Image (cartoon, rainbow, N blue to C red; front, top):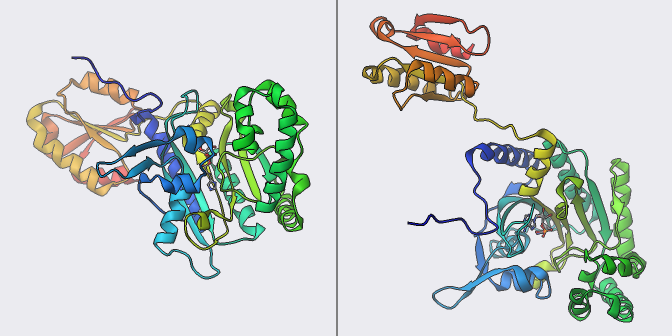
Length: 420
Ligand code: HAM
């Protein structure tokens, strides 16, 4: 019978990689706790309108990339393409808003977008993200960016770019869209077919085009920063001022508009040269209208999400690919008759040394081949159980990393030695 392959754009995370995922997730949880963010988990699928209303009907994500299907009752469901919209749905539904107090949430999960798979771009991918709900002040924009930078640093990534922009409030964007549309119409014939089609549906998205001739036209396009009103300018200036006083480098990028419709004011993206074409490993911004778009009151909020696969690609290039299984003790016996004694000793170790990984031989292999495996696994101790050990209630302990010394001790002394 033919074997079955996984779906294009999805990846199995194999045991040798899981260690790296766990390390990254531990760092994400630690940094979130350190800034007072609590974890939230929402369902992997939602009613489609959570995303069509939340992310926006004219975005690529909603138009082309969602995994949408009718369930057996005819209800249209969608596998979440991102977390922010479903998180806001949940915050409204579960009444997580407190009067004038921010709700700080973080998440780690899998997301689904029907994109063309390539390096760093998958159809099932994973994000770590945070949302600071219910603050309109620039302090929260800066808190979110500081947390992101601390997270990146703790992972060991030092080379990256922070791109920053403001897309102002709704009025700013309406005025800007009119001017931009006019400019793009004037240059329509020089634009790619894809960008031409976007002029009427979502002109801001043209600014994101990676097409070379589009990029030339875009360079001379009007800048959104010239359209910010006083309130938007003041907000953006405060963000920049606070980032400056924290000595953080950023690049003002007027063409950065992001691919989701819910943003207002501050938007930002983290980019790395280690990634190739898909160079953004994280992004976020302020969203002051998303709550009302999903039927709640206006609750100004800000957040970001980072792509875990992309972070791991960067780390692989910086640190190499050398995560190994950690085994501290390998327990072997010279005969399968000693199973009871082996089980007694392995239980003793597992119950008293919970931080140690202890494995036993379950394939009845020779001592020689077990010692070879111990070397390969970089094991610290091998415990050998033979005739005289069983007869005398002892064990033989071989130090594999230091002097390779071998001692025979009373079994009651073992834990003391392992813990010392
Ligand atoms: P996003 O820019 O669409 O923003 O995604 C955030 C990150 O997820 C990207 O920078 C990238 O690293 C990763 N990512 C996105 N699509 C893929 C893919 N197909 N394959 C691999 N990685 C991918 C959001 O999702 C917003 N919800 C962020 C946010 C939170 N804004 C405010 N709060």
